[in-house]
Length: 195
Ligand code: GLN
Image 1 (cartoon, rainbow, N blue to C red):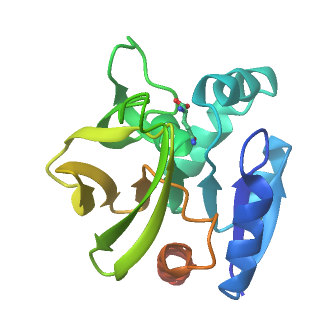
Image 2: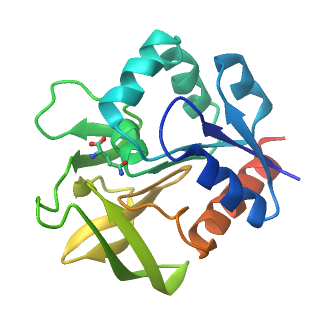
């Protein structure tokens, strides 16, 4: 059984654990950087990217997260987690982890629409995925190796670049675990190729 970590510094951690377990994988809440060595893939949850970044620095996680990405193990950033993975954050001079070739804009769906649900057609995942957006970012630009998986209102809200998966919404908050299952499959494939 593959082990999928959930970065447990802040945000929607428990919900991801529930979703990973529903997909038949083992979930590990990562609170100390040494734990990263135990897992085959990592989810960076939604929450608040600036707060999560502060905690990443406080607990000295940044170098370990970057070497995790270099190991080829899959990483899935949801909402704030996508912002942390992105190589460029609009309006900021420096990215956070900065490994996925996308430019994101924070809180980009406007004040009136801070939180909403919308059905999405996610390529290779589901044609009718009910996605929950909460102060969500979106992908302004995607690099040439990035596969756009879903758009909402013409904006990119889910994408994959090899080992990296990112989405603007919270796939862990409903009973629909198909996007998590897609990530668990990525982890299984990577594990088979990395051993
Ligand atoms: N608005 C948050 C940020 O910029 C992301 C919101 C979320 O993760 N639900 O970090």
